[in-house]
Structure formats: C-alpha cells, structure tokens
Image (cartoon, rainbow, N blue to C red):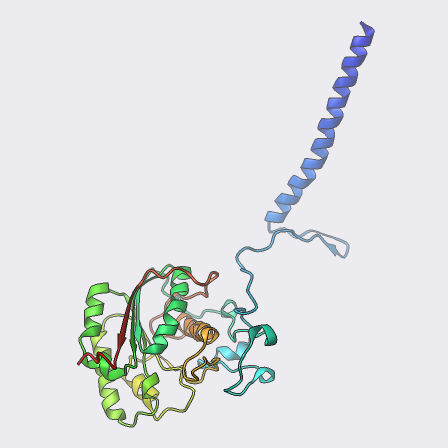
Length: 308
C-alpha cells in the first residue's frame, strides 16, 4: 500500500514539474508577445530591448522599382537625377548593373492638403504615351480604391483629334468617369501653329468641363516649340502637369519612356496630385504592381481614323 502511495506521489510530483516548466516557458513568451505588439520601449542600462515584429505597412521594395529619397526633387515637378548617376540620352540604363532607383520616395512626402480619398471612376485618354502610362495608373487605382474604367489610346493622335471628333464625348457618356487623365502632345513637340493648337485644347477642356481632371503634358526629350505652354493655358489653373523636365529613362525608340520611365513618371504625377494639383486625388504608390486590368481598352490609330 505504501508503495502505491509513493508511486502516486512521484507521478503527481512529475506532472507538477512538467506543468511548472511549461508555464515558465509560455509566460515569458506571452509577455514578450504583449511587449512586441505594444508601444512600450524597455531598456536595461544602455541595452534596449528590441522588438521582433517588422512593420507590415512598409512593403519590401525590389531594387528595380525601389524609390530613392531626394527631398529637393519634390519641388516644381522637377525630377533631377543625382549628379553621380547622370547619363547621356543614348545610355542604356541597366537596373542590375547600376542599381537604378526611382527618383521619388512617396513615403517621404508631407501632404499639405487632404487628397480626395473617395473611390473614383477613372478614364485615361491620349496618344501613344497614354498607352504606356495606363497600366501603371491601373496599379495606383488598385492601391487607392479607384477604378480604372476605360483607356482610350489614340496612337499618332494630336490635340486636333481629341478636340474635333465626337470620340471623347461618346467615351465619357458610355463609361461615366468621375476623374479624367489626358496625356497628349508627344506628336506636337515641333508644332508651330500654336494658336490653332491652343484653340483645339480649349475645345477639349470645354468638353470635359465639370469633371475633375489631370492634364499631363508630354514626356518630351527635346525642347518643344511652345505646345506645353499652349496646353497649360487652355487647362484650368492647377490642372496641368509639366512633364518635360523629368529625367525619364528612354525606350528603344528614343521617343517614349521605357517601363521604368513610366513608373517614375506616374510616381511624379501621383506626388503632384496629392500635394499641388487643383483636383487633389489620393494616389499613394502601389505596394503591388502588375495588377489585372479590367478597364475597357480602346485602341485607335490617327493614320486610319482621325475622327473628324
């Protein structure tokens, strides 16, 4: 009988030891987890107890699409490359070789005005540069709760096509956008009939009057003859974005930005929309790129269809 009692006591003591050991392991972990998720900061002498959790709000940036902070780049829509990284126009930029970074850090911006965070139905229209920009804009729409409903890409078009045809009005009536992006001017860099172009730009501005918009000037790699000034004067004050001073990597044709260039361009536009534009729009940079495009894509060619 005594042997049975002794055996029972040993078993009970063993269970107690196991439970005590378990609690001594679990309780410190529980306390550490509570500390990790709290705002407290503990230190002993000069030793600071670090937290294990990484802030999930800051996505890891791939070096090919990473953003390099340069505070003075955020002024006057200028995007100047670091002097150590300047290159000639015909230089091929290799992200892997040069560890190329985008020239804006949207996380560093101190927003001076509250941007419109309501979900918009966005339509983008323009020439061939619009064709490269709309997929990047699509990612921004996903990130900020907007919907890209339509993309009207009119290759080889000028302001005359958009002003004098009924194509724009038909697209607006069909897709009912609440915010419009206009990207036009690449094919008019050397235009000299500026009075005619300005008049056409004013007609287009009247067509979209009443709908908030962002008029994006061409990303021209040569000095224009005044087309940017003509468009800027036709657009509502504060709604025209000057792109020609941006330092954008070129595509193979030498006329359009490459894929990285379009990302830099859209990042600059997004910064302007958040901080300076007349029609403020929430445009935080996307954590995920390459989102599925659900917008209706309309492809036209001015050589085959000029619209008027």
